[in-house]
Image (cartoon, rainbow, N blue to C red; front, side):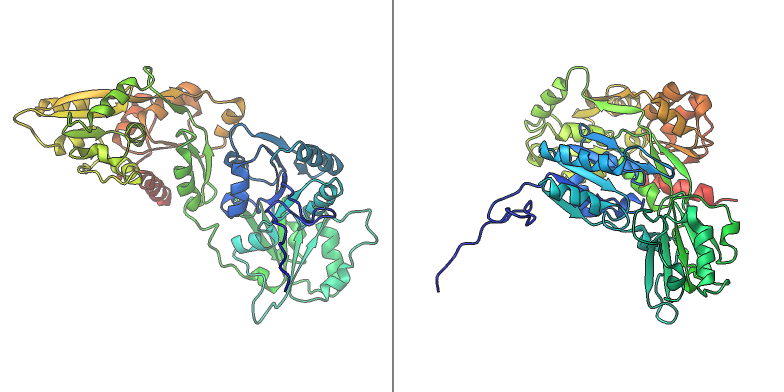
Length: 512
């Protein structure tokens, strides 16, 4: 047998004419963003967004998905809305081709699945004709996801053994109009996408085709998102309801079923402001989203190096392995990150005991494979002072914290006989709210505060008069700052952590 060597084919090769035996670097990715819930984005889609140079997105893409792209990536909106479009489809095709030919990593972020009623096929056709390498990343279609979020199974063994997905927005240029009368005779479940504008005509033709007027119908608006709204009716009554796009319409016996799970979440429909830094917001946002809320990330602080650029912190870090300190005290996750970033590795802490002010800081230490020796019962300075050991013959403590902080902790440790070196690990600086953020703020139900600096900077940026109806604080120190700023604190977490804050908010909103 004569051996042969096959050409190496990389991920960018797509098998176009003339491409055999040579590599083609993909430049355009047609990515399905899913129907709305950012958690339904595929892992592949998230990877591509994280490395994008340009994101071309449409109206149904969730704005928070754009945050997955690098801060310097260009974001181009080409969204379509009923009756108008930012860019005609031909121009979108040209845009993708032009950017692709420049060699930029272009992510075309499309609602749902790019090849299911999303004109992804037209974009792929234009790219192929222009010789621009591309990749298709399927997404979860609203045809399947939205009914599931409304608690409607598309198939049931005894009542629906097939489902048909149809667009209600037909291209007038195609040959003929869909035969809805025949669709009525197919049986099973009918899922109509983009059909609100033609719903009366669709209903009339399905009835003409023999579908029973009592057939259950469900219209799910903004499916999979916190503003989801499900209207349940029959084929005879569905047009009596006030409906608006985007909506997914389910017609058939299964539309009467309601395995409610999404709309029954405790924070469903609540809009909650997250004031943490952009880098830290995701943990709280994810926890809120898991309870059904819509997080509105409006960071009012930004963490920066201290005024000395971290010189004092670096100097103190070099003395840790030399045995200059018996204890290292860390008062926040930010301080822990900054201090540990100055160490070679965990061995520099050999022989040094570590105290963390609360579970959040302790968790950050664990990320560096360091277990705190002391975590007080409450995540406040007073509790750490009470739990800290006394010393009779002197001893030295290194405390890394924010530039502006209360003196309760260093003063309390000195009163116990310790010598305390306080070094600035970072400082928080205010971030101004944009006009768009101020407008969003007016729609919020809750504002969350995770530190005193988020309170003071929020009030400075927005004003006490623009505070949402419910104020939730992570602990007593933050709550005291809020009250000092004239705010009424409705929720104060018992456990001073992000999960504790969310649990406290859920409990508060459950009360009659």
